[in-house]
View 1 (spheres, rainbow, N blue to C red):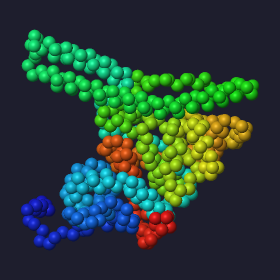
View 2: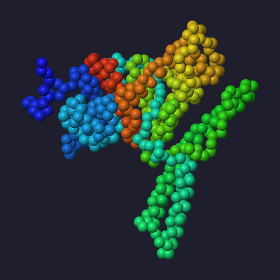
View 3: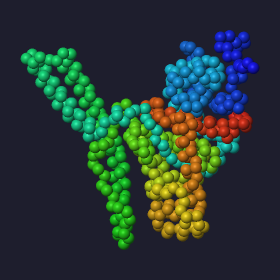
Length: 469
């Protein structure tokens, strides 16, 4: 019995032009993205309203192209351009047109502020569809994302000083060699003026690196000095009241930058950061996210920091959540965010309660914790914030609320890094990195909204007026 095989014929042209809608499944995410973007007011995007020059791509097309490609792991403008030829879904978005990488990159670069507005509008759409509560809790966390720069392109404060001294001595030697050039033969190809100019240029860059490190140190030093003085004052007041101060004596802040303070020549605004328990240190940014802890897993606020840890990130990360999107009443954070000053500032208006670990908690549960216990007695009214926070997390309600932190924000970072494949910024400089993180968060929210409400109808026209747009 002969085998029956399908005839694969790549030579015969199609008799009728293809309809790309036949090649994309009806329940595909791309339909939701296109329809959702068409429901947004895109008049804010920058285009050439004079109509001069070549025809322009509509903002809705380029925005849908960026969102879909970011959601499916394509972040480079050249890879996105390539996908307009090789990916049927991307061809469908562009209606068989092919925006070049320069058009894509220019659109992305010129609309940085307006992408932030789109981020909020998409969340307003989620609230209109009932996928997002207007009042609730958020989980905050940060993840280190590699910068588009190598740590080997960095120089330390001490190394820069040593190299400046070495290069200056070489310049002096070259000047002396130039004076003796008439009597001393030179190596073939050696040009003393060029060698001097090359070293002087390198000295200039190293001096700039040291100056930047010193400027950063001065900004941080003022904060550390103020914090040190407050701690000293608090301990003196405790001694005056007859109480023994807790903890170690505060250390006097250093009066000059650390020898290990780094400057990167490729992306000066990035920093050397610890990227994991076993991954060592890499040139990175600290990408922050505030995630809905009430079931939607949507990113409600996002920002980028150059701080290697999260001690200073609680207040700005909570503030990046707009009130029209979410009225925050609870904040969940790990021990890296806790400081008495930050918690007090967040809770100052009396509308927000913070649940932040004050120390690293062990994984799993001990046998004693499986038994039913009464809530511990609350601390005295004048107890320190660390004592109050420790009590909150020991109550039944506090334990239940804090559990939500790792169940909400950590899976979001896992999806972004594993499912979407975003592990490194492709742009350089903090403003552009913030733009890219905003686009990544926007693409993630579109993916999540499709899973939440993809089968439902989108809101009627004019719904944005309910949110002040």
